[in-house]
Length: 224
Image (tube, rainbow, N blue to C red; front, top):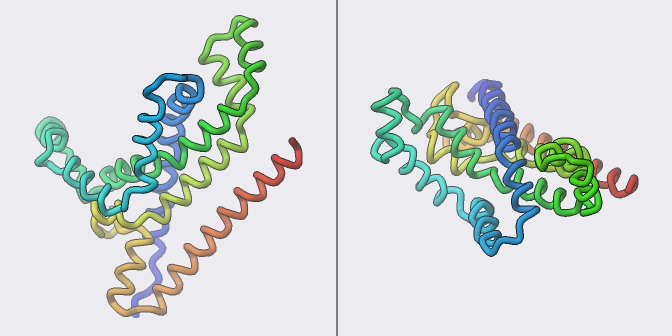
């Protein structure tokens, strides 16, 4: 029987933390733009960024594997110019995780921004505030529940991801072998006892995350 190894969990949490930070930075301006625009292209953009929700992870992982490999224009450029290889590396699964978890951060932020009263925006503009100042000092402070939901769900979703990470990163100890992949390998080895231990940790983590989200949402409704 295999001994318990904390490293896959630490790697999963590291991947999830960096993914969440990056997605928050990139999602805020896009969510703000989508919440304010009435362009005919808005449904197309929303459908495009939401694709990872409905696409099988193996399909997305397959095309990301091709896109990031050293045979693609991007991969060839990175390898020749910077000697960087994205396939089967932490950086590669980070890119894959950001793409796969993107809608889980974007949608709560956009939904929260669309619910901010127009009068608050108009008052900010009347006072001479720019769009950036309005976003930073009016919008974001008024959508804290949406921000917390997006951050928590994105983090948890990344921790539990399997298909995309496996396709792009494989299973390299200390580099791409996250907790979900470790469970898969334990099952392949018929080590069900240790697979139970790993799985129960993720179940407890997932339940705790959902509890936090629902508690925050209920508190927000009660205070509203």
